[in-house]
Length: 344
Image: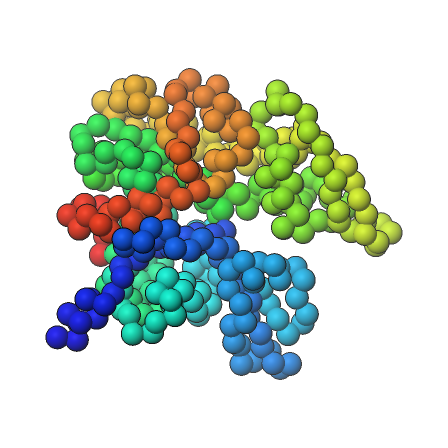
């Protein structure tokens, strides 16, 4: 009886628990929350008694700016849970936020996970969600959710290829008949691009910049193509020799040079997946092309570079950033489809 009542009042949720951002879709409401996967934790002077101070955008603003007693933590590293307790606190915050802070609700939740996740990691995700107040938890592979979100018919006997470039991982998958035919997950995504920019600025200008600055540079003037129109941007950081704040002027050509390695890793993973694809399915991909999703796919000219290197049509989904969570949301609204594409 209680389960029935809990279900009646519940508003089912789909959560894209990403390394960089967490997006929440509520049944019949659409996207209700899109915030960075960052939690600010305060502890006393002995390093004990952790309590959550802020989650999401508020916590991200604290990254790299906190005093000794506060830590801004990113609990998900490379697509998997690195800090169990903080992830649980973050999930609880997002669930309560989606339900206007109501604690009575016990929703059914679909959580998107990378395809290469281990059974131990699956259990950690499921237990985090149950502890945070879920009634039932379904796990769904991110490329599958992305394909549904990009409007592909995943139940049909035709092959679709999806490249999901997230913050921590890039997942490449070939999907047919509600299942993944072949997939590859590499720990290279938006974060690796930011890291490459930090290292490049450090080597070239002897200036140290933070994660947030690197991300701003990537979004503003980052490009995957060497032939893109040159743009410039002022970067503020700390001079490693003099130890004082310094301003340098960087160009998009330099940032492209910094990004060569992570982009090559992504292109290589697409090639490797294509090599493993059965010939009949490969024939479908030649006709239908490769669908690009994920925040990382918004890098300027990345689709052009992939088209040049693979010779295949590249389609960037309408909103790459939300494709995964909308796909999970569609599956949530269609229980039959959800049972086919998720693993309990």
